[in-house]
Image (cartoon, rainbow, N blue to C red; front, side, top):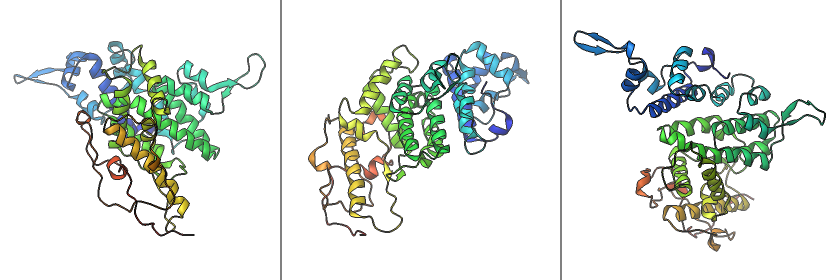
Length: 371
């Protein structure tokens, strides 16, 4: 169930990502570090001695790059050695992403392929009679939080289906809200992709498929892969300082702590800094005073949050000068702003953080406005 056909996966970046995700999971489970070692362990019969040298087809090297996809028999063989690996390769999330914009997506069919506990979060009886068919529940904050607390790919697939359904119904406000929830869950599940060295590919996939085309009210989605990676590393470091693998009995507790951080229960620095950042939509000339003030207010709070996070300061509440008084605005800057980044993150200073994360703001002359 959920297996992909050849027409769906032809040279698609999503398919490359899913194969590499599967490969890295197998490699970790077997305790190997190179494709050669996996092939030697799982398929020793493929090695041949020729002219005094051992030759092998390096099929697993193709899996490592995502350029080859394993056949059904291969997946079953690997599953016998690494239980759960077939689900990683054929997870419904990948098929949904592949079909977006190409084929109709019948929401009910794909919900039925998710974990039963996820189905319980999103399906409700159509009427009160016994044996009533179950239909997709209206999205609200409650079932959104239930899915966030799961912190796994099934929950992410369910949120993606809600996002697709909202788009079909032209429910732009709902789709925007779902875009924000999906971004939060990406920060949570992204740790697994970071450990597999697939963080940038994972984020780029969701940015192009979802985040860039979400009808954001506040502008264009502007978080880049570097900023996303920095965000998730800091979030997880604060939630579980030890190197806690994502698949442990403690994972749900860690997810709850991350959600508390994101919601502002432990200080508003994380609440503001971990929100998506947007570039204003000002194509039709200079902004109005209210346009500029609204965007600058959000930018200041976001920059203040990052200043606290990157310098290791506790930011319970933003200071008064994070609020735009209405007449003093910072001038446009063309140079990047350099903030201190924790060295153990190893993050380059090229992300959106260092372009818009200046704090405190500069008070200069007012720009021109359109009335």
